[in-house]
Length: 133
Length: 312
Image (cartoon, rainbow over all chains, first blue to last red):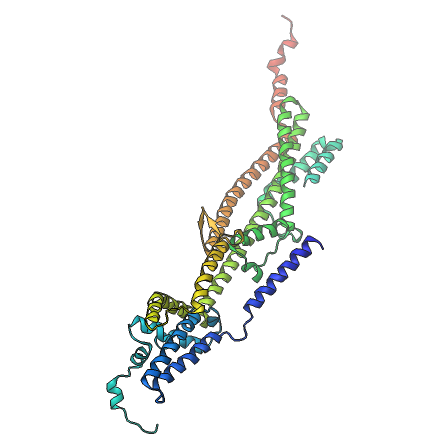
């Protein structure tokens, strides 16, 4: 094999390698994982099936997972290239998406931070009435 | 051109009748006409298809680093028929200059009609030299104009590309992500500490591996930034952007064009001098230099010959 062919083969190999690295069927994979986990956290907050102790234990576990997931999403460059509304909303609404890190900024728990971001207070809950939409 | 100069010389040496005043006058008239017209070189010669260069600012070219773009264009130009013709002209002009110098050195040693022949030959070489110089100037001018158009086109495409990128939705999401990431980085330690307070003293596998890999990634990034093939264009030892580099290239082209304009003025003056020399020589061949007539008339004056008619 000539040197030229060798170089060409090596270049094709490198190109294939780069293509494989870039091949990703779902670029929003990490963000979707975060959203699922966030939904579980919020469900954990609002559900009436759990005791206070259980809620606290579950919340701690969920927060630990959320920390990693939030960091993964913020460091994943593929999400921006997806050009999706979901990604756009996620980064534009930092306070609602990255609950653990945003809560740490405001020195609040993720739950308290979420409630504050949506302006849900004790008074507003007390004033609210149950009824059909 | 070289062959043309030699052919002219051979013709001149081989033709014995060239010394006849009529032929000389005709030849000088031709030289005179050529010398006068050299400044007004026509476009047909200028736009010769055989010595053309047609560069295109392709998408492939735009993707190259700016300093490589310049080298690629230069290489493309050097491989063109235009560059080949310019080299041929340079060689011909060098030969012409050496011939002119040797004739000028030889002239003081000659006398009579030989001097006139040498002057005629000298004028022919000068005229040929100016023709070659004129063609070379036109080719230089054309090459500079094409380079200018090409650099402008590359610059416009670069601007369009960066403008498109800056306005795209992806770019906006990228910017939002970067801003969010920076916000997150500020509280990373704080979040880690709060996790410890919650009883999670052991860090997660992601956190462990990420911090280990981060160090390696930084080393790789450093190696990439130092790599010769990834170096950004430099000017006076300072890194500059591709746009800035291309703007500097355009300035360089303008500088060369200004100098070329100045040289064209010099060329026109040289052509004028050759035309005047040819005119003088033509008058001398047609009417003589006048001194011999005066000499004759002096000897024919009655006062000069009176002594011949009497004896003292």
